[in-house]
Length: 174
Length: 150
Image (cartoon, rainbow over all chains, first blue to last red; front, top):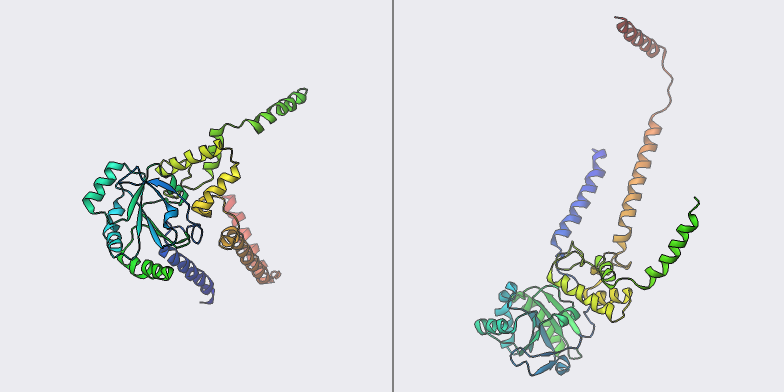
């Protein structure tokens, strides 16, 4: 009996490690940009490319940067949630249209609704690289000083808005 | 052995060539090989065909053209994607276990092995054969010797 105790204890430890491992999401990597200044960018607006949007114009307010594309299926999943949040008027949401074809992006917004404050075209994905985007959709919460405070990887869900995004946005807005 | 001076001479000639004119594509490849593709996490940026990897290879090319050093390019990637992009992660609080875990496990195994061996040695005391055992052993040996004859 005693002889089996140590192997059994080792087994339990192994099971504990594996159990914790199963709950981790290896596809969600911590961003090194959290609490760092958001990269500045100037990009043409999706619907009126002659107008350039600069991220500096958002200084002084809390805002969200939502990375989306018409080719991204998960973006469609989160679209109603993002739209509802945008329509509530709590926070301006800027869409970063990532590596997309302009006409297709506009058609997508036409079909599913456009509640973004505005969207900008990152056709070559350069700004995406600066923000460390590796999978669409991703959503960044940026504070009044232009610091990235939170990054949501993957589709934003109702519960993520309720439990994480809204409390954080309210706190940052004070 | 006569030609040793020739070998050294060739090396001397080759040395500055490799130091100054590294093919930028080769440099890009060397850097990309040590970077993890974040979309398909078990592939390097050099090997992956994911669109992000293609973009990042292009980005590395452009950074090389802009005259950045290899270290600067690696830092550029870490600033955006975190330590996770590096296949050789730096040592810090979160990676201590990663760096020393295998060594710890090895030491643990070694300790257990040494302890088990010592315990076994203690049990195997050198007891001389009793007269009875000796007789039995002789009998058994005689038996096998007999059976070999036939």
